[in-house]
Image (cartoon, rainbow, N blue to C red; front, top):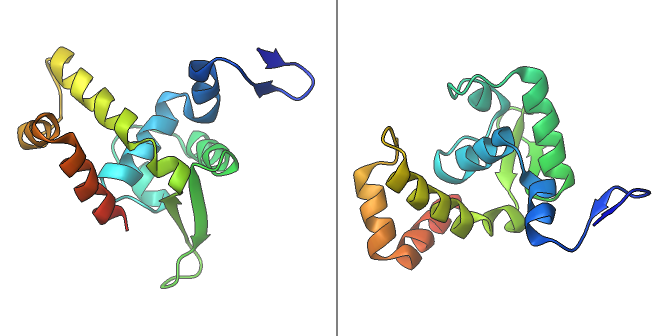
Length: 136
């Protein structure tokens, strides 16, 4: 149910999840932070997905407002910002891995590396722990 006064989503877990991170651009930003090591605005723009600057800016603000990512000044170059996943964002990893596993099965043009999917299917817990270490 959507409370029309406060515009909050409650009840259905799928609807709530989609309100937090539910469009293709947000998922791609989460993917880039989680699996591709991207953390700067220009890296998201240059990722090859074709996201426009205004859409990227809006999605980053939304993801930060929803507590999925955090934004901080780059300690090396104070004029730019570093984006990282929060604990709430990191906890999306099992869902992201399940989506990758599903897509690898049904997308003939998948870009999931064969070794990655092999590790995922052999021992998802070990793969997730390895990925979590890389995020820290």
